[in-house]
Image (cartoon, rainbow, N blue to C red; front, side):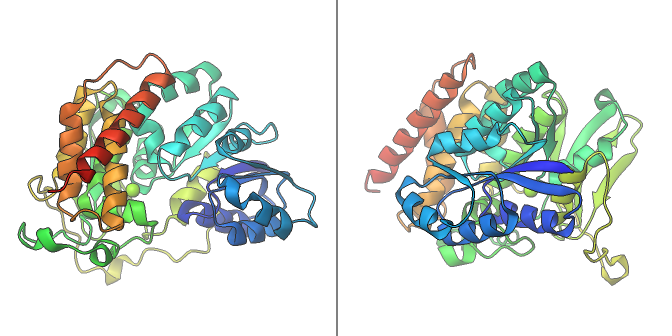
Length: 384
Ligand code: MG
């Protein structure tokens, strides 16, 4: 029986993780849960999975939650420190992080510090603090198991091979809903259009990131940290999202991982690793696929991808600044404060104004993150 602490249980990754857990009641048990603010769903999950400890990030809703689960024997805590308690919960064998945004960093670090294996869906953890996260994992010998479909694919393709045998990682991208839009068409994109992803069903932030290809940019940085900072990573647009990523080895052999676009597949792999369980999900129907296409990404139409690659190359606090500026800009777009095309412009300006500092401690990242949020907000507030 594997005991699981789940961070971000009411989000898309969290709901899918619980779906997987529910399918194997004899294999998994949920010992701790954390959620953001969706108390109704959270209360239903607590009732169903009976964790010992739960944490709600939104302190203003804690009384509602307490009332909803008043008849249950469960410890309830709130605020950011609640996430850390769930992440380092003593009973847990595996911590799953489906938290959205940089709020996922401190809980991830505390899970690794407690020696827990970490199944990681939260991109920001590695994007903003890859160096520190890996140091922490090495100290306690804890494993970071990727959940993101692309990194799960690379992780699976690498299985048994030496990382130094990698010639390059081929990171596939769906290209998002605007893959075929012209530069002109991209000027008038609405929130509704941007929220309509062709292949994957995800939360609002990551759906916008997919449409700008910032999602792929963040995954590029994540791949560098997971599989070697000096490893060559190439992004290729593959609109059908059937090949989830590939590795080309030094002998030019390429190993790809394919599957249906359903997050429960990589989640189940992270939960069962190094084993695999029988799944009831449908098999990939190869005969029904007329073609699988590949094309180079257009960095002119998708400048966010270039910005992310630049940030990784600059290193130090720059990826944290890229990430924070992107979070603020995407939020401003969702609230219709800025047009779509300004998302990348704001990130570019904030990066331009940043003086990166080396990562000696977590405070360097928190400072850079805060600075970038304030700087982005300032730029957005200026009438233009
Ligand atoms: Mg992905």
